[in-house]
Image (tube, rainbow, N blue to C red; front, side, top):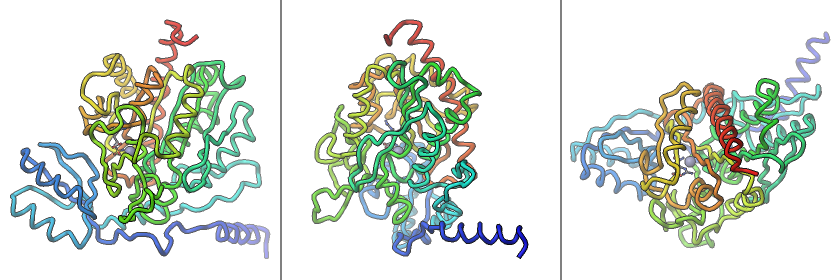
Length: 426
Ligand code: 0X9
Ligand code: ZN
């Protein structure tokens, strides 16, 4: 066997052993699930469509508003009844995705456990959606290679997975103004952890392109806020959103809490549900979830230093500002708005900017509201990343992550100059 053939066979063998197909036999199939787009013209039509939301197997992918298209995933069993009901009422609708499973299959191509790179490099890519193990191996690699990078587990998830953040701090953490970014609070929004790791890569591996960002600031980034949900979404149900806590092993069997309705600031003040089976279940009490408690405790431990907070979601192409629970303008709203416009210009997009109920729907108990209202982080944002729906083809990871990173370079630089100018942070 010649040398080339030998190495090719060895690499192939390693790839095969390292390969772990995320399509486990027990995974929920979305074969023939369709996504409809419907166009409610008036409040009656909105109310009628709303009545599907509480029923099983109707998953609203976008918010419901008069005069705006709404996208709803419907199971094959419900397809006929859904179409009939809408047609009888004369509500306009069309199929925009005819088989959701086909989209999912495309998305998973190539997602496998990475093998360590014998040359001392890393194998992280942004052309696949990676399992948590790969994300954490990448953090390990960065920590070993770069003296200004450390990782920290801020606690364990409900199922016992570490919630690992990366800390990017030149000269040690704690002396400078700090930035917080998290991704993946909602499990099915896979582009958020992928974008968070891209931001980490840019900050660390491409530090030389923008050294001021690490000279001036400490960065704390949590790429995967909800590791149990993320694993479950990869192996079992692609559209899982919540945590995986057991809700007291209740009769319904419904698990999980919406970690973005569980924070203790205007908790249960509209736009969340008391129904354990709802995607927006707020939990039995504020901070019932260990994941939200862990993030809360970390944020409080660096509270006075944080000048910027951003939580990455998908999808819808929006830069969201406080508040989530009310349309009443948050203090300093116009400054937040202007800064978001600067960030959007840097992204070269036309994303919408505004408070959550102004653009979407009210949502109370969110992390952004808590960060702004309780932790007093002066510049708090949430982003709904590119396109609609949660399934973004892997060849759009890099464009999505790049535009989001461009937002951060501009916005964080601006905020830094602002706070140092007025000595908001001592
Ligand atoms: O419902 C949500 O939590 C967010 N939309 S999503 O489709 N990603 O689930 C909207 C709320 C925005 N996020 C914060 N206010 N933090
Ligand atoms: Zn979300």
